[in-house]
Image (tube, rainbow, N blue to C red):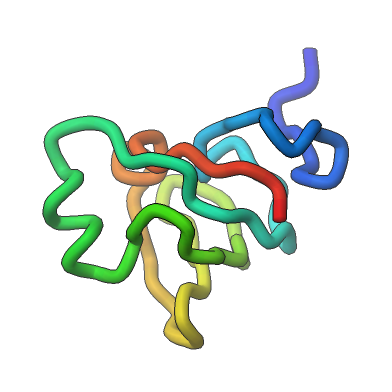
Length: 84
């Protein structure tokens, strides 16, 4: 079973969580789910923003609006993304 999907392997209407995206992929935020939505939005993770995943693990690093941010897996699981 494949754990990670490349954003380029998906159809443009497909969605996955940010934690499922492959390292190095640029994705667009489709929606935010869960209790941390307001906090994520205040950090710049808003619908239609482009995010690049830089690393994977318990804490993942990503770039949004030219700023690198670290998120734990629980937060990354609340961010639904689609390929750019």
